[in-house]
Image (cartoon, rainbow, N blue to C red; front, side, top):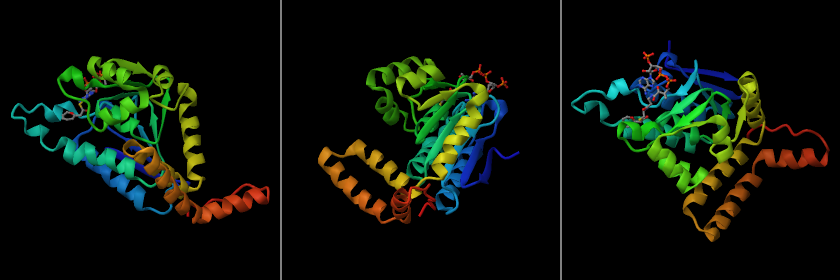
Amino acid sequence: METVLFKKQNAIAFITLNRPEKLNAFNREMALLLQQRLDECNTSREIRCVYITGSGKGFSAGQDLAEVADPTGAGMQGILKDLFNPVVSKIRKLEKPVVAAVNGVAAGAGANIALCCDIVIASSSASFIQAFSKIGLIPDSGGTFILPRLIGWQKANALMMLGDKVNADEAERLGMIYKVFANELFEEESKKIAATLADMPTRGLWFTKQALSWSFNHTWHEQLMNEDKLQQRAAATRDFKEGVQAFLEKRKPNFKGE
Ligand code: LHQ
């Protein structure tokens, strides 16, 4: 069985992390395969939304610790540079919305991969753990960048130092994630969100994602200029023309992602 399952359906790419017996902890092969799949999603014209979930009862428990147990330290080489940093960078640069459908525990790099997705949905039995401190590591995979921006410095600091488990309801309350759904509704509701996104003006969503990312390191004035540039690009898309036309004709727009 492949460690990352991949299926395209109705303009959505479904990516499933697939080492359920290890709570989808990442070995090297799985991280490299995920990178490949993310590249494929970015270049494919037919894919307009990416949906990432885990198989079995977890989302991902982060790095497979058995792979780094080597006392020589050789197992540690390049883990961030070659495996996790490219994964989170590819998600942030992916020109389509990426939904994390967190079906169970998301720990360590597994949590931070989920949190860097554009929309994070969780089932009521999911949880988020910045597990790194418990084994003497620091939070990685962009966690020190994203988490304080999502929930504020103090909460992020405490969760990262204490390694507390945050359940899905609390994660929603803190603003760490978008929404929680009861377990029995989770799959259907999270896929509905992906389907909505896949039907929307894909280029406009990508420009929105870029504008939000740029806001992290630009001033108010620079950001206004950035919005202007991106808005002009959005206004040049076919989907914008279709959106306006459909509004005037009082009909549902038929966006093509162009
Ligand atoms: C695992 C794992 C796992 C292997 C569960 N590895 N087997 C960056 C730089 C360099 C090096 C290291 O890593 C990184 C990035 C990181 O991600 S560091 C953080 C790594 N992750 C963790 O520290 C989390 C470790 N896991 C846990 O604390 C627990 O498993 C959690 C809280 C996630 C879930 O607990 P439970 O629901 O009680 O499940 P479990 O512990 O019984 O796990 C089920 C199985 O999965 C079990 O195997 P077994 O053969 O005994 O049934 C675990 O050994 C295995 N597993 N996480 N990361």
